[in-house]
Length: 465
Image (cartoon, rainbow, N blue to C red; front, side, top):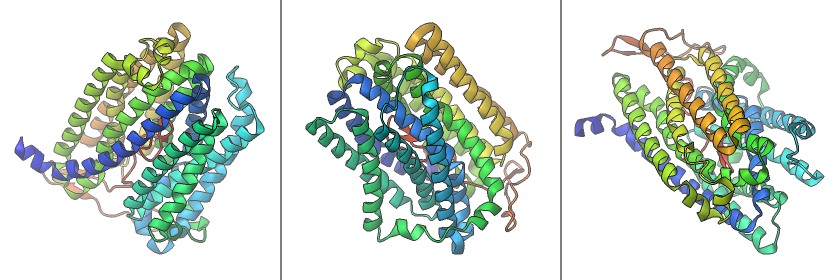
């Protein structure tokens, strides 16, 4: 046992640091939604949670793989890095604005949910989508510039500010969807300003004259990362919106509480999978051992969380609002078991990126995402909230198991494709796993498989709740 821990010391140490930051921001996020649940009507919470989830989805679509690209490329183009970050940020925000306008006009087609009922809410939603895209790209840019401290600081400051703002909104009696979105947007803007001042201009230093020529040159890598990011993350962002559309906003208020808990717990195996990148790169001989440790520890943690939700789902709901257990009953008790499938998905994603198989794996992840949504919709139609939970959990488990087996076969059976191309300079030489005699392709990203965050979902590139 001691030898196993020693061999995985780097993995455990770095994972532990990221997990600590995740726990801090998650705790503050729970405080935010606890206050909101105490002072805001359930239907308002349900609508606001759905809107924030859609904002996260549009931010992810606007990000379009640009954030992931920055993590892997900034160190290679240091002299042009600020221009690349600025170009990526502007493109992401423009895409998010366009997608936000499309959603606003298409939203009435999704039934009687009536999520955007006023012009003020519409403008907040569109602006919030652009701000979400900005946060995703710049956060990844900070990682690519080896300034992860600033990124973590922004997440913590944002969590503290929005918690204070939601308290102020409750005191003055502003208990509608506009108040929740305003606290979110104001907290995000203020957090970036404060972090820039606290770090001596780290955020402003990351941005420069947009270099669209360099971004255009790297477009092939952007598309590969984009396909895998969207296929992996989009379904989880859509589910709260589906609950509002198929069931009711009031039901989504109760669902959002346990969904937030599951999303927060999912950040732990996501962190373990993410940290595998630099650890395996530094010690390729220990790649199989470190992968086994990460997967085993993540599955154990997920099992414990699943059992906890199974036993205490009603108590969790009651802690937020005494009305929530009556709204949801025991329908959410099986939702924790979806963590097992998610854990397998995160590690399958890691294997795909380690073997530079993003393009080949993306269609399978996309098929799995469609399966998840179809099972969730069918379950909701036939069995209400409990049917949705069971359908989602079964689909995620099937996808996770199938993807990890497929990715493991591609990784360990010598079927990895050739290294990714680079149009500006040759890819770095691959390392060799001398113990196994197999090729370990170079790393394209160091933060590839994190689930989305913000609100009651995980940010696309972080772990804020």
